[in-house]
Length: 312
Image 1 (cartoon, one colour):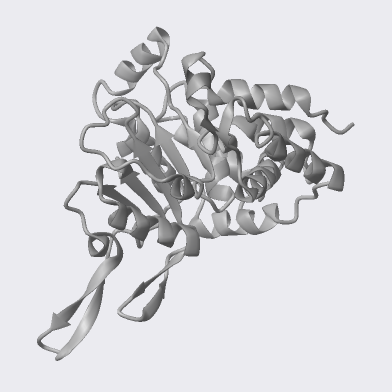
Image 2 (cartoon, helix red, strand yellow; image 1 turned 90 degrees about the vertical axis):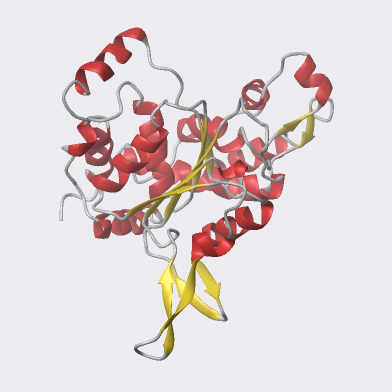
């Protein structure tokens, strides 16, 4: 087994062989995986969201499944169903695509709330119950859900309570012209994903997840996190709904993971500041008048970070 502190960077470097110029997004996706949470990618089509998911799965020797969400998708299409085996004269369980290490839930807002709930329940509990039988999902289990922020025709927006279950929301963004030329060069003969080799194992990832829980966080940093989250609830003129206590947990766990990525065994305020926006952006609901004024979640988070003093 490689040095446990080297595993995250090996993983990030390997994915960067496929995804050009998006190291920040790659790092945050790895933070999501190692924090034992899930992320939602909201961006326009064609920016590499599927490639990021596949690269992550190949890099850890994990099973990868992609679920294309459509209005006719049923919960059993995700979780699996018992099928009668005529030879054995009994029912056998056929696992659905949820039984994988890395699951890409593509265009999650295009399926019905009932099917969305089946996925989100599995994300929360890390198991599914089918016909009264509890079935554990593999570990690690990491869901990357995608949404198209432009096209809303025929979609079923996720309720706030379900959006809150995602650890972070990330945006890939367009590449620069130079980066896009590099994408063309890398794909001249074949996709770089075809040659990508694993650099760590599933067992390595599980060990890192355990080690991250041992990262020290001072009470002053915990208080800082709570003050930031509380600060989002005390802006009645701009905020309709602030962040929940689940956001405090998400910010604490991701900050511990980021400290581990930087090879530290303790959290510093800069870890919290860096992760505040991806952790909070999808959890804040702004007042309509704030949106009309051109305010966004980033403005609110920046305002709160300036208002709350960081511990020394």
